[in-house]
Length: 510
Image (cartoon, rainbow, N blue to C red; front, side, top):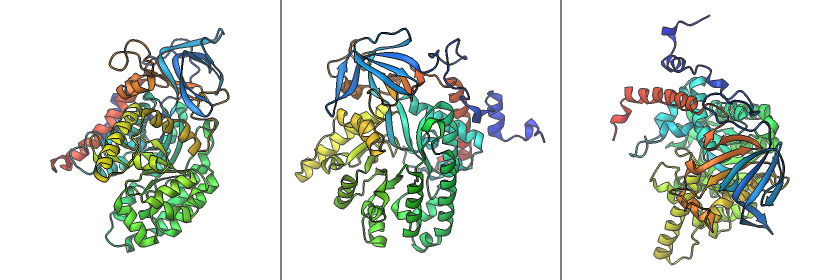
């Protein structure tokens, strides 16, 4: 049965008018490139056989990461097959990145990919993100995919090739996988449990009976998420590896958390959770379970595989000790509460002092990974100085080198993936090239200590990005799809969400 144009929903009419009805089919072709590229896309090399000539590269030497000048990489298929100082001989396509530093592709240990643009710029005035996220969950698949694609494109554009992705529902996880599979994105996705539609009454309860009554439906959510995860686990040359993603310790019972841990063991990819994200969660978990959040998770066996814990602003000394002992990764999200929010002052220095490996996570509102690296260091240094002055403690001030290590090799090790996070022969060809020599960032030449220039850089400084050898950003432009189309479709879908907020007079609240 064909619907008449006037009967189509507003979002559908707008997408059709923009020529974007087939949003779920974004980026259907693989990067085989060569001859003239479609309008809006840069020309990319044919296949995955090329040489990258960099101005410098971050390499591993004797167990340490060091910046080495004038390094070239040879990529063939999914691997790095050659790394050397100077020029690599050969007649294959060359990518000129001589004004750039070559880094492993960044790993964000905490993303909510579909949720960035619907809330960006709306919550900075102090409003709750709850209603925008509820409306996001109600969007049909094509509009949801358009928003997901816009946000994933931003992550790629800023050099972030691996996403430890806590989608805010199973539907959003399915949307993420549809986009990630078409664009050769490396993702560890999972639908948050409980998902957005059920979360807020459980999370913000005043009576713990609400949590107990939620158990049967939460168990059904676990089964549904596991079924989808098993269906896509290992898809696209192993790029898609779902995790189990409980919301937090205060929204689960021993029965539901045990079921999640069992599902994670079956999948084999680990657990991704908001962990001790605030004092409230920690107090509730201590009251109900007699232990702080990370300690409770350890008692249930959650650290048998990889575990990424986000935020940890309410972590106790025992929580930090558990994370350090079991190799858990703390995902610090400096822009998690929006621009200028106090969540940027999360306990990065305390984690370093405890010997915990710290990754930089995106969370929700900003998808600029380079910007978040910078914010993590700046906010972390400010926090350490303030606490040291106020308490007489000696917390370390994080450095950009530590932030980059957390974004690459340490996060890869936390995923138990020695083939990621490194530019070395045999590693998977996940890499990015960032211009640290040009205006506003550099000095017209590659500096003697290039990583320090990341403190002046941003996502638009990223010139080239590849995951498993697939070029996704070339010369600063999205290569896997028509960037203008992605922006238009994402904007159309978000505009409908904003229109609904206006109709509800949501913006009238202070």
